[in-house]
Image (cartoon, rainbow, N blue to C red):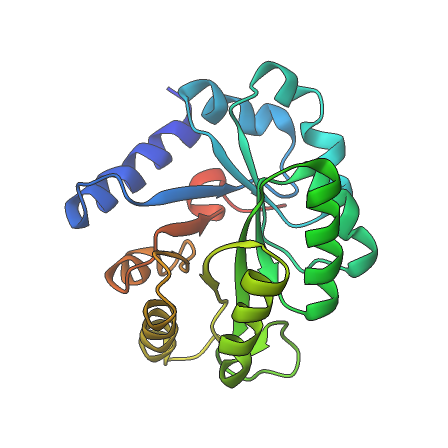
Length: 216
């Protein structure tokens, strides 16, 4: 059995000890890994994969998705506005919706494509200048703009918390904000903190190294 499948099964076992209702979606972050590294997991039956660059995703997945057409691609990295149209063509989920300009481009393009895309609004929970995301106090207005004016399918919030000792505080505040908006999905948690994220109602966890190993 592939080491990747062994790691994946161990993660599933850990999750099942917390929640047995299959409500947790594992997004296998396959960025920078070649397709031969990813194929064992696809053949095992896993469907959700995450990339952080539009061009890399297009080059890597174009052919393989013709054979494995049930695969769902998630954009988890920063999306530049000049790449937004192409992103709308490639991805089924976009986790990094973080500006009105981006919302305008994506909503127009998805309508042109007659395609339904699932979006997460990225929130800057730690107010970090170097990080993308909507400020905490502006999320409500931005959510209403995306849903009501742009008719976008916002399924939840997403965050990458600061790398400090307050992870639980950030998870709690984002989870509470997500619930206050009536959203059922939440994109929160990575390889080192996914079990904690699940305790705070995360339904999409983004796991890279814990599945595929360290990047070179």
